[in-house]
Length: 383
Ligand code: KIV
Ligand code: ZN
Image 1 (tube, rainbow, N blue to C red):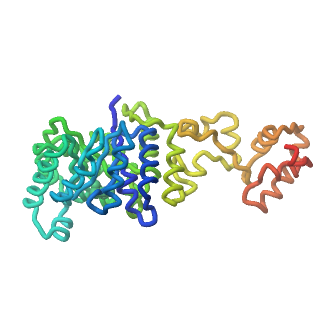
Image 2: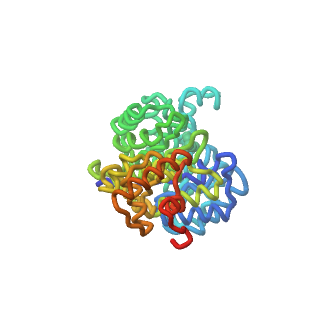
Image 3: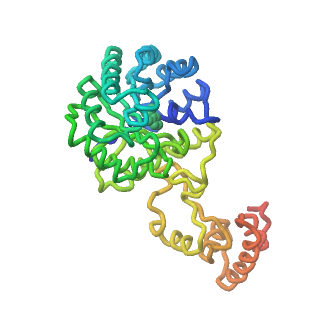
């Protein structure tokens, strides 16, 4: 089994989202939850961007013991100095520096050329190595950077001392096979020394999880993710999706250090603090992720959960699946709910109650326990 390192950027890329800003106390709470969850690296912020962000990186560095604390910079000396200062209390620290490498970034953002950008990348990594031993380089918009040039940049920054090279699909543009091929190209054409490649995918076309998995299959050993997929525009790769995909497929040979039973609580914490609701059908952590509503599915799950569940809800910290009673539910689900409510019922009577249940269910979105008790003539207060 190969270890995949989990780099969480909820507090940096995730927190950039308008309306999701957290104060330092809230960030510390999230950082502690991430530590308990078992993430390997916490990207705590972009210290040069504001005094508040600087202070949060300082306080998170003090509050957290085990994960590496990482601070983001541009390929600019001042940024790197400020990041190093913000990380001074971190027990294990990393500077994450980088620059745009795609032609649109080189031309429009920097009004520069490929050779100059390569020089700036190398200079930034060398400068950061004066402050910390662990330097990660990001080739921003690597997803749209031509592979041959990208390989030159990656080789140059590794030679300059980068320990991790991040290959962001900044605009969420790549197809999974294309992103995987990019990682493979780099593995095949770069002398990696002891460095590893990292995925960092965005969700603009809904392919962030697939791209991340494709990156892993093709040789990336670190994944950059956020809780609930919060992040710029359509968001980043959701931690919970990749971690559970790897756990659900042990035959693929990858594992993480994540304590998956803490996933749901961490998801709720981030959603509440960031004021960012989770869509009901969100994979792994959405309200409906383990809810069964159609009669055929409910009947199957009541016979054996393996029929329609590939993940045990308890593995992600959810007590149990739920059978939601709707007009689509069958007799099996109704009988099961009656039994749970302590009501024994004969088949003939069940048929009658089921007819009444369907009439009610056609009028209501979901049928509650109180409704069921009313249908069988019981006083809900006694139950
Ligand atoms: O999406 C991106 O390219 C980033 C980098 C700053 C790492 O978030
Ligand atoms: Zn990003």
